[in-house]
Length: 405
Ligand code: UD1
Image (cartoon, rainbow, N blue to C red; front, side):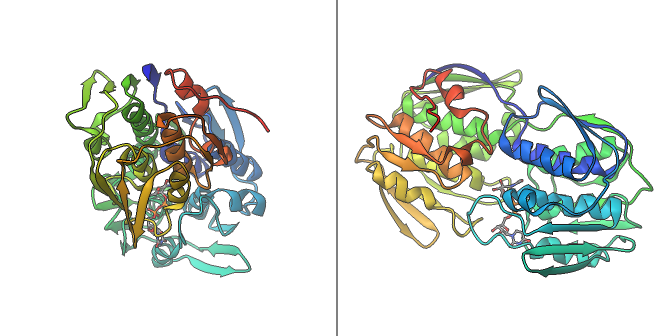
């Protein structure tokens, strides 16, 4: 695998930034957006709310005030990130109704941390019949202690707090770079926020927000997925736009005697001879190894001669790809939240199916490295977060093509 590719804005930054656009009637522009279906779905949500959406290649501008606060069930159910509309619409309209959000089936994914925090700010939450109704007469600041550093809850509470009365402190906040991207946009819009990227985020409510434009952080998971493919196939790829300062935990398991990494002026070059060493990896909240890289990296472990392990601590049901990797010859034993991967047996092509976004990416990586041909179905999940993955990998020399059925 050889060549150069550009890493665009992170899905997990772009989605909450787009949600934040309803916090003001003035135009909000998000640049460098990826062409993925999760972004299209979010634009569908925004259009259904009655705001104006203009798309110019990778630049999305949202203008106007929501005409309603009810997110249609078909839209909300299909995409987890519609949950960000909770904080944004509550802040702007004092009300929001949506179906229990969907997204990848990677665990129960409850919303109690979101609701507990919102309730502390004066929100009434009613759930029933698959619908969630939240209302507030006036949001007020509060000290909110998160029992877990939830990415989505941190983002929602920040958006709920920007125009609330008084000061909100989110204690035990998530620290992901995508949250920092959201806060940078909000600050440009006039919000008064401090501490993003640290465990305590402080938001002082302001009267109103104005329009602004901002660029999200680059997608560290897309960059990491390409590194995984290079690691199993061998080669050298330059990832232009990737930001290594946010990627320490993503990069570190890849480093070893058989790999070489250079960081240079806004790009990362990663080289591998395709010989992998066994590793022990554990996922966790940022700055630990991201759960979104678990499946792509487990694919690498399947090629590392010897015994590796992968412990998943963020989501309780994120090993769906294991059964498919086994079809390709992987020797993986799962005990509780840990997968033990014996990579000494080799991997062969097979007929495999993705059932979630990152699991699908892991299967594509495994298929690229395996002997023989694989047929991967369930690409609809991969399209949620990767921009034409077949084109991306084939432009780097990977033997992969997409067949419409
Ligand atoms: C976000 C990302 C997702 C990533 C995940 C972890 C987006 C759109 N999605 O998802 O890609 O995999 O962060 O980095 O940005 N939890 C609760 N109660 C809650 C909220 C969360 O128990 O109210 C639990 C979840 O079930 C999970 C853990 O907390 O076990 C982390 O979830 P969270 O950080 O909220 O992930 P998401 O925001 O859903």
